[in-house]
Structure formats: C-alpha cells, structure tokens
Image 1 (cartoon, rainbow over the protein chains, first blue to last red):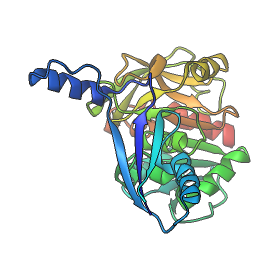
Image 2: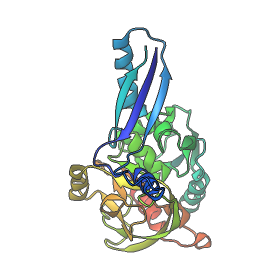
Image 3: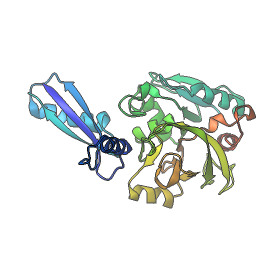
Length: 80
Length: 220
C-alpha cells in the first residue's frame, strides 16, 4: 500500500518561506496571489494491506517523527 | 565536574564544546557517540551545535530519535544537568525535553554574528555567576532559531522564571526575544547562542565563562 503524508504549518504559525514565495509570485506579475503557505509531501510504501491498520500506523509515525505537532499539522492519504 | 558531549553525525561544534569544557573544568569530557545506549557517569551532558543528520526533515528531528537520547532523557529525569546549544536546543525541543519549537528565522537568512543577550534569571545552575539584567555578548550561528510556543506556554515560561536569556535586538524573530529557556525542573537549558565560543579571548570574548563557572560551582 502506498501513502502520501502532507505536513503543513498550523494556522496562525508564521510561515516566512510562504510569505517570500507570495512576494516573489506578486513580483512576477501574478497579482491574484494572496497568502501562500508552504509544506512538505512525504510518500511512503507500506508493507500493509489493511487500510485501517495502515492509517493508524501512519498517524503514529506522524505524531512521533514526520510532523512536529507543536507547529505542524498533517493529513494522510492512502493510495490503494 | 564530569561532563560528556554527545557526538551526532554532522554536528560540527562538538569539538568546540570539548575544548571549552576542558579549559573550564580542567577535565576532558567524554565524547559519546549517538548510537551508544549508555552514558558514562557524568554530571553534565552537552548537546552541541551543528547540523545533526544534515538537518533532514526538521533541525534536530532525527537526532532526537537516536539511541543515545534515551540515555540523555534518563539522565535528565534523574535530575542530571543537560545543556543544549544551538542544534542541541533544537534536539531538546524535538525530543520533548523542552517545550516549544525552533522555526526558520523570520528574515529567512542564516544569521552568524555576535549578539547582545540580557541575563533574565540567575537563580539556576546555569546562570548563577551572572548578574540579573547583565548584558553579555555571545555569538549566534543559525538559520532556524526562531523560538515558537503558544501564548500559554510563553506565559508559563516567563511566570516560572524559565526564560534565562533574551536577545537585545532580536536576530531571528524569536517569540518574546527568547534566546534560552529551562525545563520545569530547571536542570535542562537550551539556548541558540554559543557560550562555548566565548570562553577564551582568542575567539572573541569571555562572556560564556560565567555559564561554565555556574555549572562547576553547582556540581562540585
């Protein structure tokens, strides 16, 4: 089973990189760009066929290592 | 005072810490490899600055999961002293030994320069040889030293006298100008500036000496 984990900064946590990207896009003429937030995508291959177990395991991985839940939130996507 | 310095791959200030400890205590610290599961019998463990594991994932994230950190946590739980400098501070927040997190500098630039700190609290093992309110000059060298914690945690840190050092002229956007904090038991200090780089006039100053004097006096 494959999974994709999205890790992003929590709302309210300042994201200076996202801000810089937003400024750069505005500078390139993309005037419609408002706030930009940057995050990470982590793709994993799991030796697991049960979706429930995989999700529980991925959640533990996120809490333990993949995300720092003081500043970050995460979303898990299973890909069959 | 017996000390140990943890050696993580890609930590580049472990030898600075060793030289400073040797010079200040007259005894060479034990250099402990990150894969070791036990610490020698020491009073102080130093987590040095650098870029452990290449800062992969997040600064300090991989190091916080290394085998030796279980032993460091056990040492701290028993009341043993732990000093985390720069990347060592990041390892301490990632491992949950200190609250909050260290984020990308607000200005997005790596900042490498001497900064002025104000010593906010001296009733602890790390700062008793400073005067309260004393201004000291200590270098910083980091890209991710922007301390973040929620308002409640920041209020608690301040209320409990756990903010030991604050920046005068914040170099990184750190919440409430925080440069160094203690844990609730006051035996673990994390700080972004490098006191081990200012124990000898040859390297630009001696304002870090009082930190080591404080530890030596407490632990002797």
